[in-house]
Length: 569
Ligand code: PEP
Ligand code: MG
Image (tube, rainbow, N blue to C red; front, side):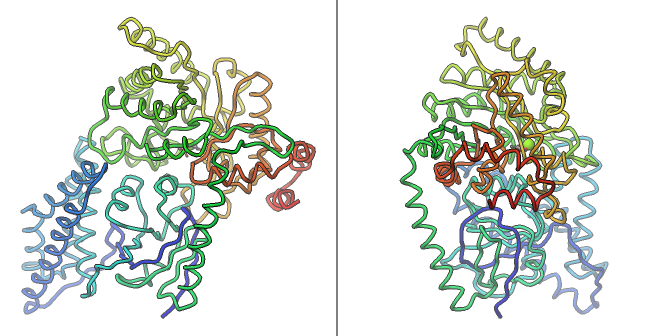
């Protein structure tokens, strides 16, 4: 029967496909016992599920190809090994045979038993293996409940799950997942950012989805509006087709703007830089005429792997970006691991009581021996191939920038002594995303070369609203007088001191906010290439002098409604 769920659109695109439900990793299974005479049947049920999962993983491995095959393959091999682990299998059998537990509850007990052994280990690498145990057990649990029907199809799969980690997105896409629907999550999470980068439609915050959708159901997902339709009717299918056609038409029209300047109606040129996470992003940025890369998030290089990338590996990746932009400026951000970007190497702390306020960004880089030095060496070596700037995330004090600057100078001197070719001038900039960094800016702006305002975190910290907490999504908005004032002050100060300043948070990529940011004085935007042409189209339709005249009224707005009224005007 047709049902409609409303979530939040986190990554645009429309998809029609077959549902694949992945139950939450933490198994919420109530204790359930079985009779003596049911033991053999329960054991058989469990082993059919385990065999199903084993076959799925082998099929998946065979289907992998392309750039991600190696990394994803390692993942799958590890999971296959766990699946054959005698300790796991024997323990499960014992729980059913001697404890007379139902297979579901046996899975949960065995999961908790193994997880407690791993969690007690000192070594962070082993501790992080609990995730893999959860994924394997979760897959067996899902297989136990899968309806007996053919799950292969032509339209691909739409994954319905509780939440999705940034590290698994690329893997899911490689597996053929066409869209993702999550019960939790927010449009500002790093998973959402990565989904946009992969052009993978994503709808978050549809709590009903996990309860109502079953494997094999047909779904229509609209990643722009956040609508999910279960068992679509004829009209839904028609409008899905229309929407897909409209999107294609709009894309074609936008495409014509690739070689046009980003110039306002009154003739002012605005710079559009790209946020990039992958080689594909860089290629897209270049072909759309981005002024350069305004934010290269290096942490994605550290995710989904068990060992840190060494200097040479990092150097080759950064050099690829620089060469890919053929002489346009490339802004490489130093590692911003931590919070929801947890790696598997044990670098970022796990289980911090308050990870958004924890050891993340530059704090982590400065706390781990050699980490920042290796990264700076790699970036500086890449600067021999084209213009590069270095951007530091999560700065909260002048002291942090001073320490990075000292290290940068020392590393540059070392490299020159070693005969390496590096650029004469590699500007060093600060992300302005912690309110303290914005407020204290007059005291240290002379020590930095450029600034980039990270509104994703700035909004979170200014308003004390978790960017990933779906329950607060109504409160999470840049349309707050405090946010606008801080942005305006930072832009004004930077421009008065002749320092380039951009906004690189998701806000910059939303064309509907363009009038507001232009009114606040912004001349440089950094955004994902996916919406670059839309922003260019919006800017080309705006008159900057009119907007600047209206700026005082914007700053007088007392609340969100007032700011929205200004935007409508
Ligand atoms: C930001 O906080 O706005 C930002 C660009 O950084 P990230 O989203 O990677 O935290
Ligand atoms: Mg940030």
